[in-house]
Image 1 (cartoon, helix red, strand yellow):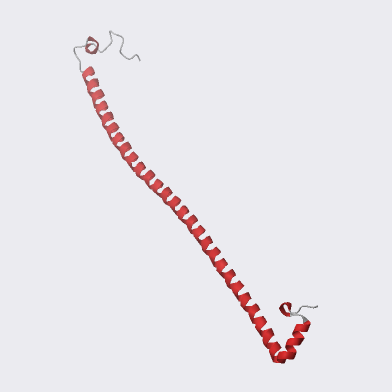
Image 2 (spheres, rainbow, N blue to C red; image 1 turned 135 degrees about the vertical axis):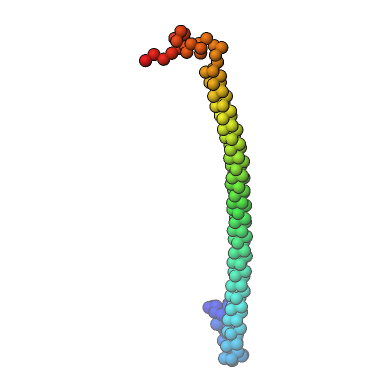
Length: 141
């Protein structure tokens, strides 16, 4: 036996045509086609729902990755901010040390100048009184 429309044999189709006539056969074919179309629509709707679900999952994964990347960028940005703040503190400390060293050099220069004046004006020292000639401290030309 040859099966035709959805498992119906040729003898069954002939019996239906004899019983219902040609309009009945058209109605049966239309009904079978409508069921096939409805099942196709249901499958298409399920596929669209599955695709939408997958798209939502992918978007959620991308969102999570984006959040992780933004958190990492925020941490790195805060580290850079801290580095610049620390550099400002370091520069201020170096400036303070520099000012202290300038003061120290100034005081040392004044002290050496005074010491030189005292040595040159020290008339109690026999070397200074005779100009250092007797002691061999004069310059030789």
